[in-house]
Amino acid sequence: MTVHNLYIFDRNGTCLHYSEWNRKKQAGISKEEEFKLMYGMLFSIRSFVSKMSPLDMKDGFIAFQTSRYKLHYYETPTGIKLVMNTDLGVPNCRDILHQLYSTVYVEYIVKNPLCMLGETLQSELFSSRLDSFIRALPFFSVRAA
Amino acid sequence: MAIFSVYVINKAGGLIYQYDNYVPRTEVEKTFSFPLDIVLKIHDDKVVVSFGQRDGIRVGHAVLSINGVDVNGKNTAEGKEILEYLKDASNYPVSIRFGRARLSSNEKLMLASMFHSLFAIGSQLSPEAGSSGIEMLETDMFKLHCFQTLTGIKFIVLADPRQSGIDALLRKIYEIYSDFALKNPFYSLEMPIRCELFDQNLKSALEIAEKAGTFGPGS
Figure 1 (tube, rainbow over the protein chains, first blue to last red):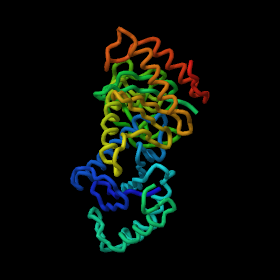
Figure 2 (cartoon, rainbow over the protein chains, first blue to last red; figure 1 turned 90 degrees about the vertical axis):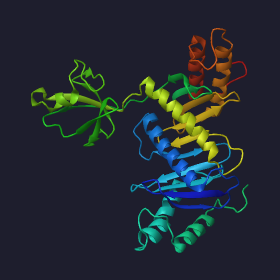
Figure 3 (cartoon, helix red, strand yellow; figure 1 turned 135 degrees about the horizontal axis):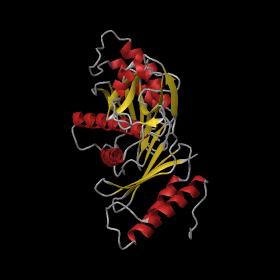
Figure 4 (spheres, chains in turn yellow, purple; figure 1 turned 30 degrees about the vertical axis):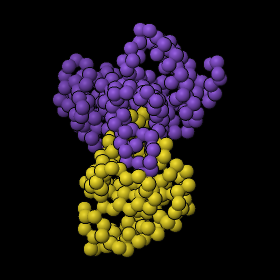
């Protein structure tokens, strides 16, 4: 069980942060294009889900899975989108992404007076805390199962 | 525990079959006096609530009927514009029914094609090699399951998140498709499915799946 990669987007679609731990296959397009495609896909999935849903939604789109990976999604009320790709054995990650937001993003980015909104996250402290948070997750192992 | 609907998409991404098994309708009817404290706006040829959520009326709900008479797009049944009608104080008190707007056939076609593309993008953005497209999409109100056959046909089932046995149901729907649509000499491939036996057998397969039964070899 492992975490492949993690994206953080802001409300305008800028990718604020991307890190990978166990990625086997690159998308075949440049990183900027990949971020735009990922954001576009998530935007379309959210719109699709709000139209298709038979009842009024509270949390909206939570996750999707394919035959090889599972994508977990969490959006904050301010429009910050956290996207995590893991392998299939991992259960619902919504709480983990919420915890990641509250203990890592809010502590090291929002409370940092030098971090400007809308710019990629440069803080070394943030990157290392994020990395140790992910490595400490119960389902993270360096080699994928 | 319910199965909401079934969609079948052809190789090109066009919707060829759609069936709504169970669509829960949350509708609220209330009587209002002038002035109306709910802000309405026109969206996609429908009048929807944009501000003023209260008492079961949520943002995004559409005006379904006025004084018991179903509306026609953004006009009342008589042809008057709804927004103009509601600005006139002499029409009050008025009883308006709000609810989630039903999807029109055009919207269903567009959503099916949208899903066809999202399925492909899901496969492209995979961090692992050899991934299929989106097989299961989860939200808090429903789960969408998709099965793509070797010929490129996608069978999509929208169900309650707690419903089990959908994988077997998808395989069963594929079996029903090959028995009652493909073997029908009057059915052309990739065209909309208009076969009565397909409809009947699909309905009974959905009933069996909802009762959480399994499909025997002869059923």
